[in-house]
Image (tube, rainbow over all chains, first blue to last red; front, side):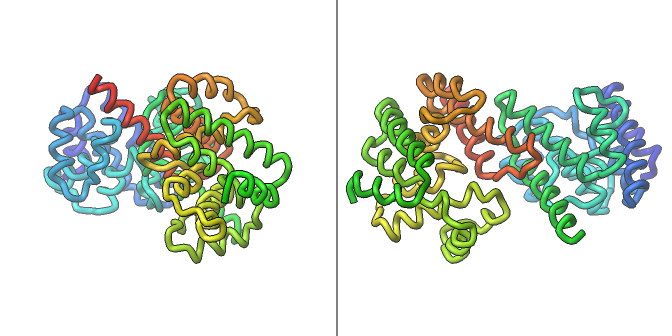
Length: 194
Length: 194
């Protein structure tokens, strides 16, 4: 499917407000991919599809998580906000014919992150935080940081998510902590070889 | 070894300041054990020994971690502040003759916490945060909470540790996040059956 067909397919799945967000993530992903040397076309497709299942009913998401061997079952113990990402990757593969594993992983990990994230995964994950429609305390700082250093921006973004959840008495998905730890380790390794 | 011998052994391993902290953890552990129905004698022994290796040289701690199969090696990728706890449990067993697994686990997990913590582990871990010599922002709130609800106090304490590390750009040991998640899950399970 080409870009227009994918956009039309997504438009049917989400609210108008969310569709505007998706267009923002698409534009920002293309920019970040260009700046940091990821594949722009793949970034565009992953961004278009990243929230495909955002408004699917909880029961439907739960069923797909349960029946899909690749999706870790511990997700069901955590915030439902995390569910649409791995399910979205599964649906993109099964129903929309996306076979490229890099695109699928960028969809799959766009909310949680993971250890040793690939460049395309970082691009879509960060674009999701900073696309122009996003308004939250600290978003401008993240946008500035994203222009200088994608990893530093992601470390900050994951840190914000972690403290946000802790301050609200919510559980924190361990993979997000591990994603942030992994980025910090990479940074330290780079510093040591400087 | 009885209490006096253990105290004398510990006194040789730590600074005077740290020894005062250990006495504080001992008193607070006994109080918490009494209030929440853990074994007071075991709480006392675990508290006396919890910081036995606190000032051991980094190299010595690293060697013991490397040669001890039971100690997870990923600890070496995290803050050295975490190392003395599992090493302390090993030393308590090998050199001080402590065989009781409950006591050893209370020493082992007093800094990191872990999933599904036992009562004795919670007692020593929380006492370490709130003993009378501790001074940090929010410690009074923790002390008050500890009088009402040990799990709620630990959730708060782990949350403080997590946000402290995130705000300082440090890695967060995943087990601490999992300890907090586990306590939150237990609380929700209790609420659901109320």
